[in-house]
Image (cartoon, rainbow, N blue to C red; front, top):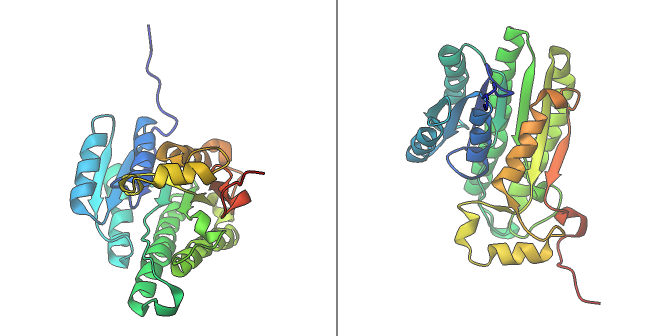
Length: 260
């Protein structure tokens, strides 16, 4: 007879931003499946509610629509985690936006919006969450979502790429600030990944399969599984690190292999 055992995150609560679909949603799915109570955030209210309803079929998931770059909302999000579940243990700052544009004509509006969401939202969510984790006195885990564009230059992504590189340095700095409280902070840097957004491009899979050493772009499960490791007890002595998940692309980028 099969006996269902408690998941490895039973009794823990996680906040995941930018989780209405794609990588964020898969992180939430894996967390809920492993017993965590999850606060699923997305700026799109319909997406957040729909995603949460799907996950409620397998565990506890609370829809928290709102702008994760807004400090008032961030404070409400952390407070709700504690009010609704009694604890906060894990925060995945996954929300981000990509606004393409060539450097010479990139607008201040686009620049500051990218920085507000990608940097400001992550920084202040980490700050607010860390205060709660310190108050609880049990440690915890923070994970930021960076990108291979923080390692390799891409045309028309100067602002986005610099914001992602900055997140990796933020994780390093927080080692100094938070390690003594038992809080580890790491970053994942996904490469090309199959999501609802990228699947809209008919050439996406074939293009990235051709130039990725492992022969395919990542799945959302590839990225989420790496996150699950970094927030697990198996990674308690890992902090300030960035895990690049790109099938080897950054080792050979940007050109595809050529025939000899």
